Length: 545
Image 1 (tube, rainbow, N blue to C red):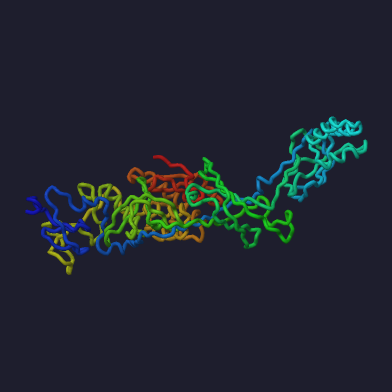
Image 2 (tube, rainbow, N blue to C red; image 1 turned 180 degrees about the horizontal axis):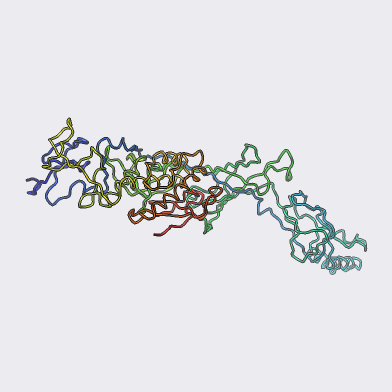
């Protein structure tokens, strides 16, 4: 009798709860002292309901690897694509001030360079001609008030000061007026032809200044926390032949697009002079496609690798190694997402080891425990393997391995549930990891996840995807296999709680012949599209049972 008169039921390892003994001693796995479990108390398995224990040697066999949570700079490389456009503030639309007819065009094509004051067209207008004659008559009569009114009227009808000054010198037979370029630049649009009649306010020409250009790209919600005005951007285009231009972010539109959940970001870049003299001597053309790398600030944060985080329906979680073979499930609150790691705000402390490889298998065992693979109270057992055993007082089963410290102990094999096989669950977990890698645009993680795929279940009518040289090739392989896997899972879906099926309405963009509405499996309720990746991560809808 110990512990205030309570009866000791048995002694148990606090780190490996399946190790039990009738007498005090050492754990045969980790060597820790066994602790007493009293009548009416909770044993170690009940105290650690989130623990998953692997028998000695099985972490190596299962390929379990860990990495420490560390405070490191959160590196995020934003590679974006957009378009080179002219500066809106330097764009001018020239419209007709008065109704009339285009008698002659001095500029018959778009893309021509013009100087301020350069004639663009000859224009006949009865109203403009009448106003000019009235102004000239007022000057001849010496009526200053009437002449001032006439001058103001001509200005309202679109004549420049130099043109108004020439009105008194016009001959009677001269009935047309020149339409002049309001500024220097490049003609981007010509809306009229010779002989065309135009109404007041109708567009004639559009002129842009290409000395300063706008590079605009789309930033999605997950990237916005990394972006701020003033960040450096390196821009490259196919037309620059391996060279790049550098500038900074000038504006981030605070209005998000509801469909794509994205905001437009503007970079203003000086358009350098081209030796070929194109477009007023500038190198970058209008409406040119371009790519850029944004130099994102890298604050030091507590971070774990991408592969450590699993996304079940209840939220992100990781598995922390408490001792070799013993892992604790932790719910985590995540912050910003870097290239290779994710910021952890809650759930893990600096220096703790998180599982980065093999965590799908560990999570599969945890799922089995929740489905009935644990003890009567629903708590964890060891993964079933030939060497796995649970010590039970007084059993006549095989004794503990020779050479281990502590008193003689006996073991009874653990059991696995009959409703869901570990092999099927492990395959579905590994399959979800392939999709997660594509959702994160991580080719190396995709190839690694493909290598870890176990043999597929019987009846699955598609070979697993192979390693790929680029993300597009990976997504094409993934689509065929994922569609077949979803078809295989749907009739069995009720037996796999927590599994979600989503579809992508834009999956036809993966390649020629690819269908729309391709599907994939996830353990997370948060949509993460493997076909679109980080560009449109939340594109898609869930396929309900």
